[in-house]
Amino acid sequence: MTPRLSVVLPAYNRSRWMREAVESVLEPGLDCEVVVLDNGSSDDTWEILTQWAAREPRLRPMRWETNRAGEAYPALLEAARGEYVNFFADDDVMLPGGLARKMAILDAHPELGLVFTPVRQMDAAGADQGEGAWSVAAEADVLDGRDFFPPLVIANFIAMPCAMFRKAVAPPSGPLGDPAFSPFGDWQFWLEMARRTRFGFLREASARIRLHASQVTTTHGIGLGLYPETYLRVWRHWMLDAAPPFIPTSRAFEVMAGNLAGFLRACHGDDRDQVMAGLQRLLELQKEQARRLEREAGPGGVEAFWARIDDPDGLPRAAVRAYLRAFAPGDPVILVLSTRTEGGSQPIQDAVVEVARDLGLEAIPDVAIIDRDADLLELLRACAHVQQIPRGPASGDAFEGEAGERFAGAWMTASAEEGR
Image (cartoon, rainbow, N blue to C red):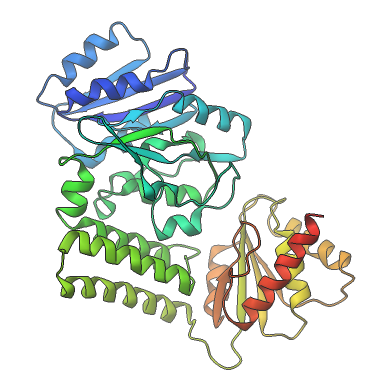
């Protein structure tokens, strides 16, 4: 019988911690399989797993004779048979009920492809060290299914053991084993998933990660200086290579620079030259994006406000209403709505026309509805400035510049009217 959930984890020479990790995910009565890959261990890991599997049918041990490092998670994802998947590690601990709570949310909300929680930390001996500050950067208190891509691309705030996702909507597992993103392939994996589906957030932590000298984030992220290198590679991918690209606002770029500076100092200490060199690379990345998109603002340039729509009913009506109110035909602005829905652009066009009709408008400012990435990129390159419309609630500081202030003000008004 196919299990509903697959918890997958590689194990390598950590039998002293692996036993606790596996015990923590074998929740009583949970319809799951726990797939553990012995990644070439030389200790008693395999012996423990085979003896355990003989009395626990939910445990599926796998074994490689040699350590194949980054290949483990892609292989485990392929081996997973469950509808839902939760990555795990051999030195972490799932908190009681942590898996069941996430499964319940995915069961109740089919529109969500992934649900995640904050993470708690513990020392090598297992003593709790409190909630990891980086894991609550989602700035949400309840499940809301909003678009987490913009804040997630600035910095990863999803701890691997705290996320559960539908295997059917998972992207190809390439980033998990790509050396270019090591040791943070999970971040790139979450980002690719964020472009495919909506995420939910639960405020109660579901797992604890163990902090110790031999964990990969310490030995590779800081010891080998891969933290800043990987962040720059991820940002380069989404700012220059992805379609559509991530276009950070000035505030977002400031946060990115602050994050990068922190990683550079963690890796290089007080070496100011190394820190400044790393920040210069980020600045060059921003300049390269500006050149590619031809975003240098100039007299007469067109300001674009862009929203991505994932389903025919996903039109941000308050934002569209605000745009149609804030601007007039002939203003140097354009509302760009990109979609990949099965119905194409026609349902979105009909919805925009309906909003304009409700407002009593016979003529409206420019609106472009695009269902091909190539056309989207061509249009964005022709604009002097591009600002992405977030999916969250209206905010007074969501946009920049004079046109952005007009749009933000009208959007907040429209949102207040919708709430009445």
